[in-house]
Amino acid sequence: MKIGLVDVDSHNFPNLALMKISNFYKENNCDVEFIIPLKKYDIVYMSKVFTFTRDFDVCIQANEIYKGGAGYNLDTKLPKRIEKQFPDYSLYGITDTAYGYLTRGCPRQCDFCIVSKLEGCESVKVADVNNFWNGQKNIKLLDPNILACKERIELLQQLIDCKTNIDFTQGLDVRLLNEEIIYMLNKMKIKRIHFAWDSEKDSDIILKKLNLFKKYTTISNRKIGVYILTNYNTNIEFDLHRIYTIRDIGYAPFVMVYDVKNAKKIYRHMQRWCNRKWVFKKCKNFEDYITK
Image (cartoon, rainbow, N blue to C red; front, side, top):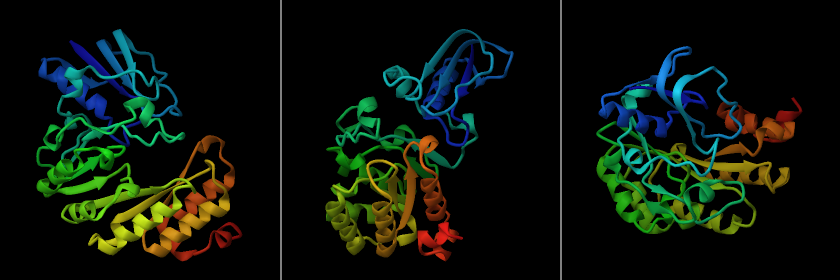
């Protein structure tokens, strides 16, 4: 069979579902490729992660077309036989980095996040590291809340044992940090850790835990970032308070704008000011930035 794949969002970040689909069909002696316009396929799989991504509007010739991913429908899931596949990294020409989930789901149920609706309100173990890693020098973890999983110590130990660079791309739940977890993080080869400070109601516990982490971690400040959600139930004053506070702690704030398409221009200015590190370092105050 001829299998065609469409990464609707782009090729800027590899689509894990498509890589698993690719490996499944290749193991069954099928021809698999990203679709070529006007070429005929037996089956085409289209994956879209983000709802704001414009749909693929090129004519597809196929006997069957399947659309999946949160950008299309929260209820679509990969069949278990495909979900358990090792990713086909050759699809994107990836040689030195592994991508995957050790856990799925999150108990936080934040209004701005679809994870609990998509994956469930409990963080559960779904894989071991060797289900998506086979010696690459980098691992990019996509877990929404690994620290909320009851097997978190076991999974953190697996990451330590890999002795490879670890990037927690989606952020660790800073509210769940304790000395044991910090000690285990210190034993990893950390490439990047992200935390998040999304709302005012959690400010006290977040600052307490960030200071605990600061006290006991041996990880370099330059590897630590904190996501700052803006344009969602906060005001500019509190947004700036979070940015300045994180900077004072010694970590890098990273502004995330909710609903970028409809956000006021000031939020996009704030994002550019904060996230362009050379600008942020040179211009200490946002007020100075927007008046220039």
